[in-house]
Length: 94
Image (cartoon, rainbow, N blue to C red):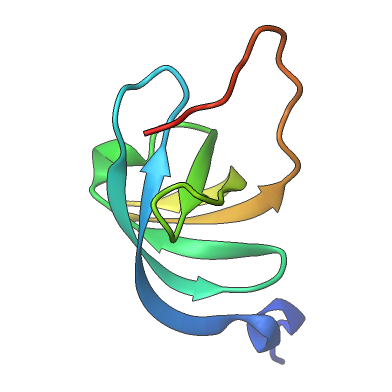
């Protein structure tokens, strides 16, 4: 039986950037598949340590806030979530 989620994932193999709050700079990844609810990412293992981070396809003109759902070596699955409200957080700009 096919998992319903698998029917909505679109394979894209597209380069993107990650930003982790509290860690300076941006980090490359490859978005392997994408859906309206989330994505499958591949990156160097040490980039996939955070439970939440920002993902951007356009140099951070726009971002998607991601929450880690699963990890497996150099890949992870994320769910797109609304950004948390944080006192004093002014946003990140490259």
